[in-house]
Amino acid sequence: MANKEFSKAIKRIRSNNKFTMQEIADQLGVTKGAVSMWENKGVVPRDDILLKISKLYSISIDDLLGNRVEDEIETVNKKLSYIQRGLEQLDDQQIQKAEKMLKVVFDDIFNDDEGEDDDL
Image (cartoon, rainbow, N blue to C red; front, side):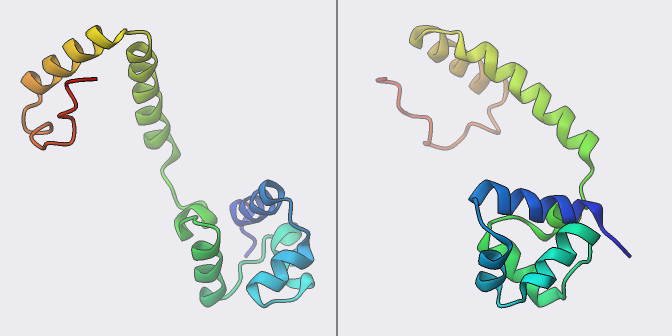
């Protein structure tokens, strides 16, 4: 069965890295024809090759195969982006104030020393 998401992922990896099909094939120890089948017909390679692609290009196998709940991820990312855009408009003093407020409200999240750079 063809997997269009895998096809898109391989094309995107190749395009982003400016690799030819032959270069990807050489890196993965497969033929150029195999890469062509992945890209053009959505043929999914064996598990060992999927794992190699995942490790070599730092992409999860779930992402390669399109096994994600996009709506949930997109909603969370939109909310976080909205909050981040707002915080980016604050000056240093306002950011420190926001951090203190967040620590009070979410003390169970901010209980480590990672954000203890109050002298910024």
